[in-house]
Every structure is written in C-alpha cells, then in structure tokens.
Amino acid sequence: MVLTTFTVLEDIAENVAGDHLRVESLTKVGAEIHGYEPTPRDVAKASEADLILDNGLNLEAWFAQFVESADVPHVVVSEGVDAIDIAADAYAGKPNPHAWMSALNARIYVDNMVDAFSELAPAHAQEFAANGETYKRKLQDVHREMVAKLESLPDNERALVSCEGAFSYLARDTGMTEKYIWPVNAEQQATPQQITSAIQFVETNDVPAVFCESTVSSEPMQQVVDATGATFGGTLYVDSLSEADGPVPTYLDLLRHDADTIVEALTGGGS
Image 1 (cartoon, rainbow, N blue to C red):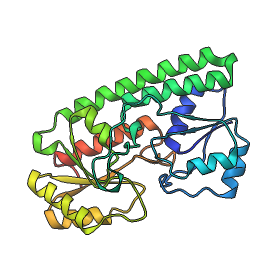
Image 2: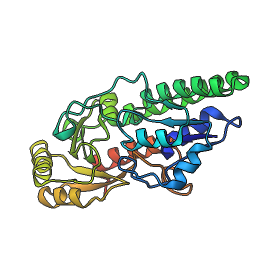
Image 3: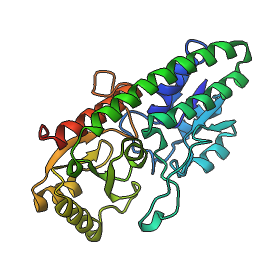
Image 4: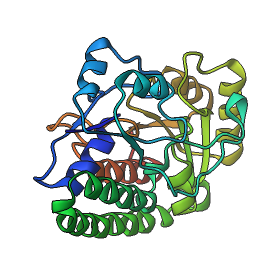
C-alpha cells in the first residue's frame, strides 16, 4: 500500500499507479493538513504501508515525528520544484508549500511518483511511466485552460485575495497578483494588522471580489468584505478534495473549479 498525507496527493498517485498499487490518504476529505495531529490509528496504518508520499516544503509540520514513529520509507513528491519563498510574517523566507497549485509543478510530482513506484514495483515500471505521461498531458491541458481564462481579466481584476497564501504558484503561472490575510494556516490567524493590510490592498486596487479556502473559516475575509464593499467570490479548494459528489472530487477538478470561481467572481458573476 502507498499512503499519502492528503487527498490531493492520493488522487495524483492513483492516476500514476493505475491498478497496480493501492493508494490511500492518511487524512480525510476536508482535513486541515498543516496542523494535523496523527492518531495512534494513523501510526498503525502507516506501519502497514510500503511507501509514504508527503508534499514536503514544510507543509506537514507533524510529519517528521510521524515518519519516525511509523518507520516506513517515504518520498517527498515536491522534490525538484522551483519553490517560491513566503515574503511576510513569521514564515518569511521559508518556501511556500502549496506547489501543487501549479499544474506545471504537478508534473514534477508525477515524475517523482513514477520513479518511486517503479522502485517499489519494478515489474510495472512501464505502466507507471505510461500512466504518468498520460496524466501529465492532462495537467498541461488544464494549465492552458487556466491561463486562457485568467489572462482575460482586466488589470484591477487580476488580483487574487484569499485567506491563506496558497496561490503563489497559481498566480505565477497566470500572471496574477496575490494578496492573503495570513501566509500559512496556523493556530493564530487573522491579526488586526493582517486584516487591515488586506482591506487596504482591496481598496487601493479596487478589487471586486475576495475568496477563502475550504479548510478554514471565512469569517476574517468577511471583515474585509464588510469594510470594502467587495463581494465574497466563493470557496476555493487547496489542501483537500471534496467528497465524490462534491465540486472537486479530483485534483484536475480542483484546478478547474478554482479557475472558474475566480474568473466568475472577479468579472461580476460571484456571490
């Protein structure tokens, strides 16, 4: 069994593994990955795995101790990504961990998975490589779709204001300006200074809509809405997929949903 730390990695890994490996996510749909606290059941589950895949880039703050407890080989799937450093607050200078929010970066994740799975089950290396190439073509298609949609926005609507700084890579890919309330989900969120900074950005740039992620409370962003008159543009997905009957049952759906939600809200179609 291959165990991933969260559902996005599980979906990507399943596309690479095909029918040759069983893939499961340690955390469930809707889990907040940054501050997750593994349970004894998690450790027991991990000890039965043949391989654990984690994102790295300091995303899973709990992971080092967890892996030590589980004593299972693991692979960091973001290895080789050109990381963007966080610019502000206590996390300044550390890499932004949300590299999978770039479909281009996700191709690197796929290559790392192909290598890891080929080492784990060498008899199926060809199939893993073929599955990886097929999935990377889908990622390239989604990237082109996102760029085309987001490049059409006027200058003042090319600003992506969210609760967490999870969209640096998406913004780099699509030429958008990113503003967030806090850089990384943590226990202490949304200081008055952070909210004031977001309000000033929205007012200065005449940003029509703002967003928040599915795994955190949107209340701080609602303060920005109340102070500026911007609309709340909707919920974006980053750290978790939805249930199968929800809006983002797969990673490719997640990227498309976020792009569509951003464009619709910033061009006046949001809530």
